[in-house]
Length: 369
Image 1 (cartoon, one colour):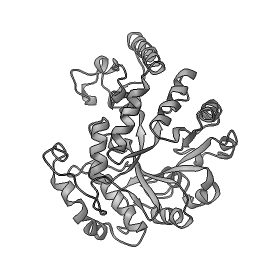
Image 2: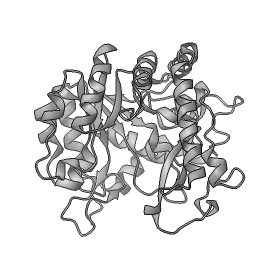
Image 3: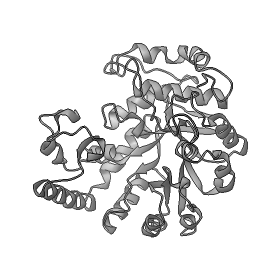
Image 4: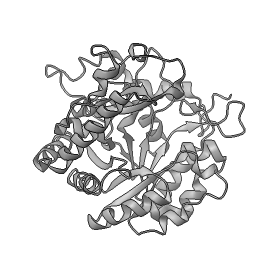
């Protein structure tokens, strides 16, 4: 596989030019980087607040990129500052943890002590298909797909608890969360609730909370059924429901057109990596056709479907996804599309997700400036 980036520069050359920017981040332990005894780092414009808008294009990240790090809004603020991210698609579990959602009892059922190591799960199996990941506080836990009657009863009781909590939540706590982020220079443009399977009251809650956070959209996985379910709530709140894709566009006969036809409140949360990796089609074809219905994109680098290792996540610049062409088209056309990093390639032991997102930010910056 070539070591050339999509702009003709090698990753080694790119990292060499970026090292001065990232050296401070790399040298400071994460548990010390934002100590009150240290001055805040400044960005290129001399501000202590992050600024990831380059050449008129808003670069951000989905906070899922930091799933391997400690969760919570305070940590997200720290990660945004260290990565120079000023706009986020916020995972709802971090927001709801801040708002005081009831503790998920499944962690106590499946894990001994405070450990989240899958090896400590009850009846652990080596087959990843035997498990599912669910939100727990500001992180995730792995639980078996097949539950015992006792475990299923705990799940059902917890779902009822969180439904009642959501319906009665104090909106002042949401405003507090929004202010905490905005005071640190961070805008939330999406809250990822994925609420299509929720009750009507909870779906209404999701859009109400996302709007109060300053977001314009709630995201969900793309399907006609989900569009029909969520569109009336998006319309009610003058919001969008933005549909994310995995490999659906590679399925025979699949089209976004029936989904978009449901309502003007439907938008796409278009994942260019999953799209290219599964279809081999240039993402700019979708951008040119649907740019006025694309609210945001997820950016990642992947191999194409005909590669020796097809549809595989790669360090940016080492895959085949035409990242540069996508970003330059959005810049050239001045489309108001949020461009969010989704970090999915394996992170080396000597790095971490915060440093890698920072490297991706600087990769995009070099293309756009």
